[in-house]
Length: 142
Image 1: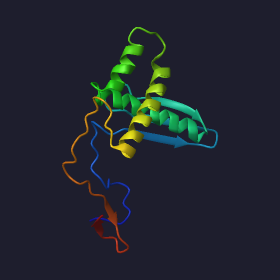
Image 2: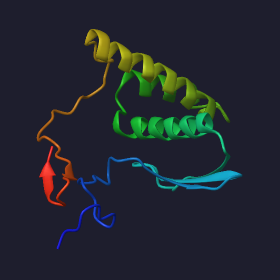
Image 3: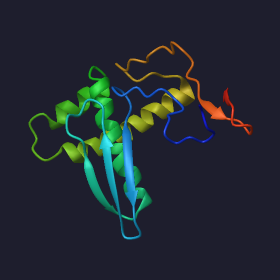
């Protein structure tokens, strides 16, 4: 039996091989952030001071690692590999630079319709539906 606002059940289908998952344990003095990043074998764990911008930077960095795993043939991924291939200790700095470059490329995609070189856009096979409980506790599709 489905109960309204049941937090034990997911409202959407989760694609584990392509979804970045972050869990944040918050206290007044620090935040502990754990993640599952698709394509990365290790599961990152980071302790942060209470700082929203640091949290967003961390999540963006994890998103860029995901981008590198799924868009290996893109010009941006090749740019990253060329600069970090033989250089020691530059991967963290360069992933931040990649994040900025990707943000600009995505902005151009949205504004001008220009797909970045080598980026493969997946066709939208099926519409994702989100089940939300209505005021009577019944599930409706939106």
